[in-house]
Image: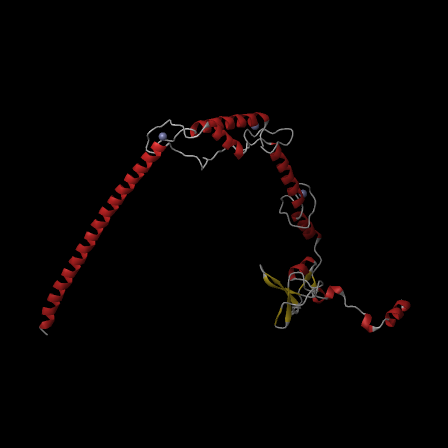
Length: 284
Ligand SMILES: [Zn+2]
Ligand SMILES: [Zn+2]
Ligand SMILES: [Zn+2]
């Protein structure tokens, strides 16, 4: 005891380093009534929020000063206190302790956790269950929902469903080729069987898009219609546009006429009113 005291005395005062728990990690961002406001995790570590004091069975003493604040986006500036200045709470009765432990007890694994679980699963059990569900999903066929022994390949299908899927895809591919090689008609209901693309071209286009795809787009560089259907389509479109334009002009004309009539009526009414008003005022 005396030797350590002597050693301690022998150390020059300039050597005494401040307790790191009492030193802020960085300069305060601002001050509120002279009390420093720190960023998250920057305040001296020994300081406690009121909630943290409660966790240590401490409560704020009457008039206990705020020594610092933590700046938070969600909760505003949270005051910090010195735990040494706080009062001790009464020790918990064993029944209360038991009740608190119960609230933190997982319903599945039965372990008492740090967090309150409200009679549900703890986070460890939830994570385990989630992982289990994911493993099950990896073994479940997306089409028939049958669960396989092992995890399924990237197509997520059992053997049978995968074969069906591929067969449908091949069928669709063949049907698509048959469809795109002929003219799609004039667009106004008339059929046409003129060839516009070769099968070879259509298949090459499918192949270029990749075998894994089960959808095909119309190749933008292909003609959709034969020249005569294209011409018929354009003619029909022009006629439709002209008809629409004529109908629009008729409606506009009718509207203008109605407007004019209304204005004329209003003017006539105003004139008549002025005449009546003039005679009655004239008697004054
Ligand atoms: Zn658990
Ligand atoms: Zn299946
Ligand atoms: Zn055609």
